[in-house]
Image 1 (tube, one colour):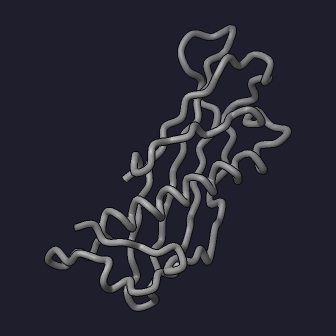
Image 2 (tube, rainbow, N blue to C red; image 1 turned 30 degrees about the vertical axis):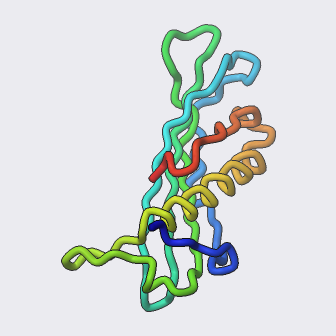
Amino acid sequence: MPIKIEPDQIQMIAAKVIRFNLENNIPTEQINGYEFRYSATSRPDLNESQVYVDLYVDVSADTLFQEGESPVAQLQFAFAFRVEVLERLVKHTGKMVNIIKELDTALTDISYQTARGMIISRGAGTLLEEAFLPVNESGSLV
């Protein structure tokens, strides 16, 4: 039976841009579209009842005048969540402590959606101004 996680048990306490490196200066009118590669990692801190999520995004562009993808940006975001009853939402495997999939999915999805807004905000006026992270299926980063 899946464990039910109530929204009021989760509180985002930090959201930071760690890296926002633009690697190319392609004029936006020459960009046909963007490709995104992203991954996420999470790690619990049982002493603080917190979970940290790191989200990595590599952005490439398809351009009018160049074959293949051109690297555009390397982005990294860090999020921290306070989670009530965290000790009930982890699995112990030897010395490893991992959060259960339901919690990992919820926190990663929240992080991804928050990063989308951060990219829109920080990318305004740059070659990322039209680079919108796609809507993803819940749990696809876990």
